[in-house]
Image 1 (tube, one colour):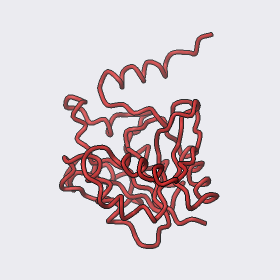
Image 2 (cartoon, helix red, strand yellow; image 1 turned 180 degrees about the vertical axis):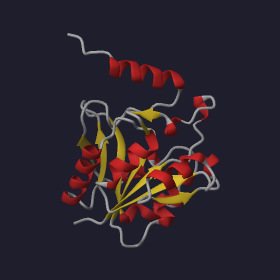
Image 3 (cartoon, rainbow, N blue to C red; image 1 turned 60 degrees about the vertical axis):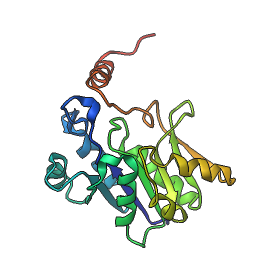
Length: 208
C-alpha cells in the first residue's frame, strides 16, 4: 500500500468573488471547504489543508468541522498557489510515499472520486496520476510520488505544479489519467456568476 497524504489548497484570496468566500459557499447545506475535507478524509491517510492565517474564517471552519484535518498556515499566500504547495509539502511527514494535491474550490469532487484516484495510486505507485473529465481532459486532483517532493517545495508563482508536469513529460514520464465522472475533475467556481450558473444547472432537469 502506498502511504499517501492529501493536500487541499485553501489559502487563496478568492479575489474574483467580490467579497464572498467561495470556499465557504454552501453546497447541499455544507460549506464547500468542509465538503472537500470530508471527501478527502476517507481516501488518504492524512489530510493537510493550507490556510491564510489562524484567525481566518476558513481556519475557524476547519477547527469546528474538520478536526481530523491538519492546518498549514501560509503567510505568503498572496504569492499564489506555489506558496501553498511549498508550505504543504514542507509540513508532510517523511512517512508518505506520495501526495494528492487538489484545489479546494471543486464542488463536484466526491469521496468516491478521490478514493478512485488513491486506488489507482496504489496500483501504480511510481507514476504521476492526474484526474480527467469523462472526455479525457486533464484536471484535478494530481498525485505526485515522493521523488517530486523536492521540486514541489521549490515552486514559485501562481501556476501551481504545471511546470513540474511539463518537465516530467519532457524527461519521458507518463502522466497516468484517472477518468472521473462528467466534469468532476474540471469544475471550479471562481465568481458569483459561475456559482449562480452552476446552482441553476443542478436544479434544471436534463433535456433530450
